[in-house]
Image (tube, rainbow, N blue to C red; front, side, top):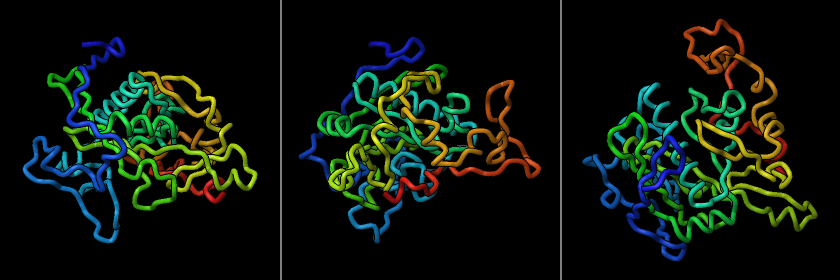
Length: 296
């Protein structure tokens, strides 16, 4: 057994089954193949989303119904989301995959180097080169961790979308991979930052894009900066403030009351409040706000 960080013991990588790019299948792994503690799957299938690879749960879009039957309560969800991002960042660091946080997760980093407590997901991207490497070597691998305060080992599955190397806009396959907690069903959506060959052909050198329609310039993202998030090393985009303002506007970087939470400057953390008395506002971290970069 080796240790990735002093406080986080990582078991040896256990492989459920490895699959390179030629063997990627057309939809997420069947329930019987990845089954853990549930008697049946709680996935929701949209018959109108033809060709969709990843399917969310029937009770909440932020859970994988193959591993969960109901959503977690507030405090429990926060605890497991923290472990989810810690193990993801630790594994990608060990693998050598280039990944960085974005969107609501980057906004949480801005405030106190932690996830926003009202946010239900973690937003990360990987480079195009790293996505190909992960698809070649790590599809359907299971990573076992022993976490502080938890007696049993926890398993996290890395699953690749069969469309992960397709760089065209695809509304039902915007997510290229997922890091999934097989105990709670929580997951991290992973998207790929790619060169925008169409824009480059028109003279916009350095243009980059994501399959969900977001557009960036190379110099906004690279070189990546090094920092910490939830107590582990993390990489963030170079022009992080500019990106956050275009995501959420300037008030998101200074407003102390958001989404029924108040930022306690002494404790340096967001605390829930019952009544915000009309102060501040509500910022959505479920995705970027529409900005000029999205229509390039």
